[in-house]
Length: 186
Ligand SMILES: [Zn+2]
Image 1 (tube, rainbow, N blue to C red):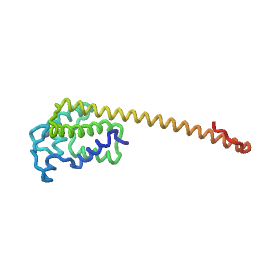
Image 2: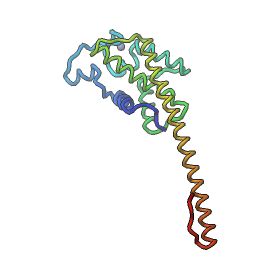
Image 3: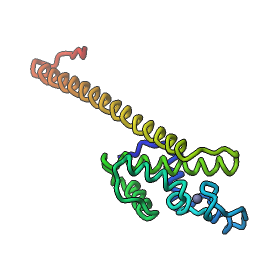
Image 4: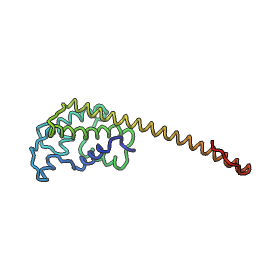
C-alpha cells in the first residue's frame, strides 16, 4: 500500500533514515564547521538521532503524538528505521498508516523548523510545530480517503463497462447463432 505523502516528503524521510541530511555533525565531517549546538533545544549537539528523537524540544512533540495515536511505547531511531524499512518493503497495513504518516510529517516539519531557525531566523513554539505536524498529517490522510474514493468509483465504472461488454458479447454470440447479422453496439 502506498503511503499518502508527497514524494518530496518521502525523499526527505528516506534521506533522514540514511543519515543523509546535512545535519551539523555531517557537515563537520565534510569540513564545514558550524556552531554544533542544536538550534531547537540550544543544549546538545545536532545529529540525526538528536534532532529527530532525542532533542527535548522534539521529544515533547513526540509525546503528544504518541498520546494522540494511543501508542504506549516510544520510538527509538532503530524502530523508526525499521518502520521505514517495512514501508519500503510495502509491509504497511491500514492500522499503521496513520502512525507512519504522522512520523513522516514529524520528520518533514522538524527539518523545516530547523532550517527556518538556521537560515530564516523564524521560529515556532513546540505547540505551533505540533499543530503544523497534525495539519499536514490530517491533510495527507484526507487525500488518501479522496483517492480511495476515486479508485472505488473508477472500479465501479470499469465493472459497469465490463458488464456492458459482456452483454454485447452474449448478444454477438446470439446473433452469430442467428446467422451472423451485423451487430449494433448501442
Ligand atoms: Zn536539540
